[in-house]
Length: 301
Ligand SMILES: Cc1cc2nc3c(=O)[nH]c(=O)nc-3n(C[C@H](O)[C@H](O)[C@H](O)COP(=O)(O)OP(=O)(O)OC[C@H]3O[C@@H](n4cnc5c(N)ncnc54)[C@H](O)[C@@H]3O)c2cc1C
Image 1 (cartoon, protein in one colour):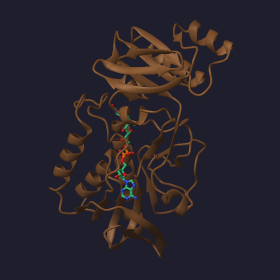
Image 2: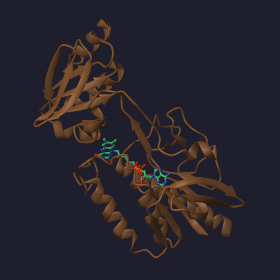
Image 3: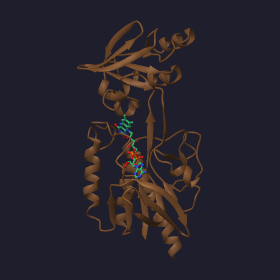
Image 4: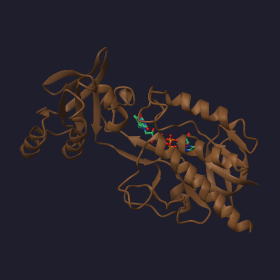
């Protein structure tokens, strides 16, 4: 039986496994290979790794973990979790069934993009959602925001001081006059007709609307939703927050004893949503690992 089974090997799960391995806690790390930033070529806003490809971060982390005898990594998906007395039984897609005294859910979230033809192909390379991650790369360039007016307004506030110009393009229906007035008052141009498709061009993204087209450096998406990547939060019946994320405390503890969570899929109730970043996911992974070590120590002594 492992001391801990970490499900998910993004920054949260990788860091959790490192902390557990360094404390000589036998740890199994399961990875199905579906990363939230899987299409991203360069990640930003990460000290000492600004601009590093996320794939390089994961490869480096795995190489570091290989140095720890107590950490085992398997490229397999967890398919089921159930609890037995003082332990958890996890089924994996490689046909194995493993047991762990504690579990960390670090399976992340998936982004459901609005249905704009071409948008999915641009996600992570020319279409983004987070100004902190991808805003600076468009400094002094023209960008577009596609989506709903309230979220567009928020993005204008963040991106307005970075980029040269912002055009807000509605989806589905044209904006109401009041929405146009509000967005223009914030300094944006507003397309009167909704987007019909987007495509990558050499110098950026071409956006087609019902009666117009324009080329911008990049697109920010102010619509869509995120959801839990795996079904385990629901299966384990842990308390959830309005954001759709798992409620955790300071040490990544969920409402279910022995089940911890870290990364984009979980946050404390005092936050409006997950602070989705590589650095903070890794920090949450470390806290959850510390939480597990404390709880194992409490059980052992
Ligand atoms: C387009 C885009 C650009 C971004 N750019 C940046 C950036 O520049 N800088 C930045 O800091 N952040 C950026 N982010 C945010 C960053 O990607 C996330 O905050 C971070 O990846 C969250 O880490 P995580 O470990 O919680 O989840 P993830 O990185 O999504 O990892 C989830 C892990 O769970 C695994 N998994 C899922 N289900 C199972 C299962 N059933 N069994 C086993 N394993 C499973 C996956 O394979 C994966 O290993 C970006 C996000 C997006 C969408």
